[in-house]
Length: 67
Image (cartoon, rainbow, N blue to C red; front, top):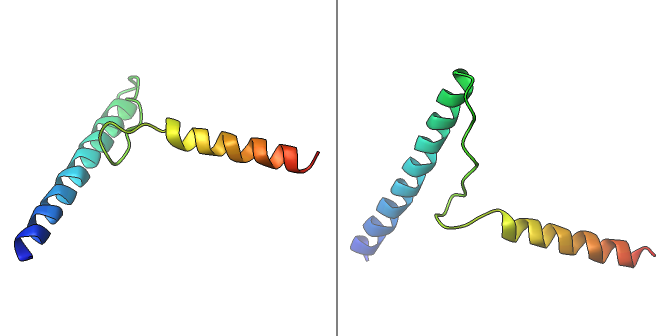
């Protein structure tokens, strides 16, 4: 059980380090007036498209509800 917990915590640490590296890169480029990198999600290979799709569906549902 403890070994599994260590593996999960190590994976979490690596994800946090990935996000920190992106943040530092963003700040460096912003400070030097260069184009900033595109935002990344916490988990690799995920985009904001899923969230945007949910927002769009909620807006459409809300619009049809009040017509």
